[in-house]
Image 1 (tube, rainbow, N blue to C red):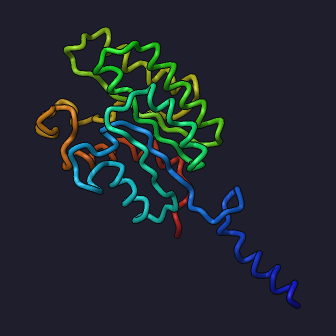
Image 2: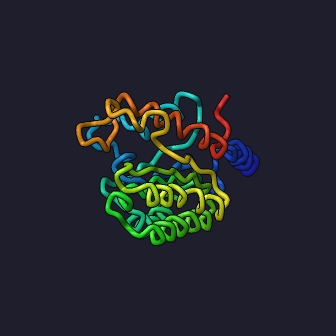
Length: 210
């Protein structure tokens, strides 16, 4: 009878177990720069904070881990990612990096290689990946700007992952939506960022709870 009771209890616990046999919630890992770190914003105001709140509200089980660092580049993200993958074992990885590469006039071939390596590492760790694109101000020159935008499309196509072409789509030219540095969005722009990310992200998530 004790054996039967044990087996019954074990079967009841099975739906709560993850693929690795533990009880943890699936992790959605965001690896980004100051835009995702919420530079200049109060806690919970960034698009990543709003994402966590929306997931909970709509019944998704994913737990958001924000590993974004202000000032980070694709080289920094590439160096950090393997340890993050081992620590958090994410189901989904959102990569929002590259803006600082471009603002520093960095080599775009290196940016492409770094993003490609990050996507590969995440996929090799059995995570689904969403790549998030950015643009540079027009004073960087149209040629450089076009090549920078193409980096995200090229990596997404070669690695067969979804991409958000431009994180600031719909408001990027409106300086009233940005802090005085003209780089970081104000709190009122953060829901617009989430609105740009959400449609591409939802197909990567598990089913919400009924």
